[in-house]
Length: 142
Image: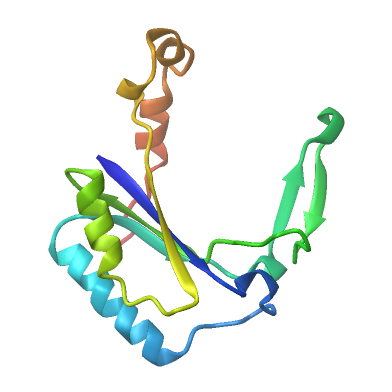
């Protein structure tokens, strides 16, 4: 089972462009990331720049509309994520509990939908999706 652990740092929705975590927090997080990797459960991870550097595309009335960050209505935003592969939801929760997050951080855990989770008609409509996933997977460069 794949799970995405989403880091939601309170206050990040109003962080200035270029805001970065301090070195001590990064060092603690690296130890956690290394534990995930050594356990063989880590598939991917990344931190995200603050919303003030982002954009949102909405589709009101069928027309694309771009809004540059920050987003006044945002109450919670993502600061980063981990993609892990574990045996159960409970194991994903145990990994999240080990994160050295601070009092202003929340980790939301969401199971990734697998093709087998969908009914036959949805699987048929999504034919080719799994090949698309494999073809777009990051590759190591030499």
